[in-house]
Length: 329
Image (cartoon, rainbow, N blue to C red):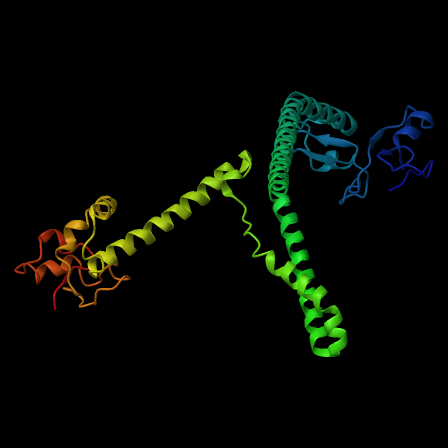
């Protein structure tokens, strides 16, 4: 409800003498001080007597009009002026808020500032780490690019030269097929010299990027690649040698070969001792001996195999091992 004096501000007070709603500013500047002033509310009129509330019963904790005190509230009730009660309760509430709410507000503000600083520090570290990772990746890529650039450039030159030689040979072939005998004989010497020059060049050397010459920043990846390649070669060489021995291809090895086989056998769980017991099929699953089955696992040679292989001539340590054990058919 707007002020009935200025018609601008919202009314917060009600004059019992003038029966008007007014704002605080008009009450201070225009209104007589002798009139009784009460807070203005949407329910500021008594529902029973249609009179404005101007009193407050502290015993019943309700607002009263002047007529209510004569009918419903006896003389022993504590009746006070509504505006005084309003000011007193407002002051008490402000005091409580200032005493307890201010401390709580300060604590929340401190915690909020701490969280903001934490977030700022985390974001700063994250951006720094992200930038460091990006710079490292760019540096490694640049070093690798510079490392292989000469080889790539040389390969491009070789490719260009090969293409030129191919075009020269093609033009010579076209000349042979399309020119007359007179024209051919006139250009024969030039064509032959060109063909001999191309032929004398021989094959181009193979170009590879040497892993050993990779920059220091990439040594870890170089080592991983080298180990992986070495293990692959080792396993292949082991299987090749064992299969050659077991298939009888090395019937009369000389002393150097025997020492080499001995070294390989130490790397492969002393398989040299099993060579003398070479067989053709697995005792458990009847799988034929082959380069692929030498070191394969056997699905039949499980722990349960010991139940029906106890009386066999197979050494106990091989029963239930999970691998093939080859015997003669």
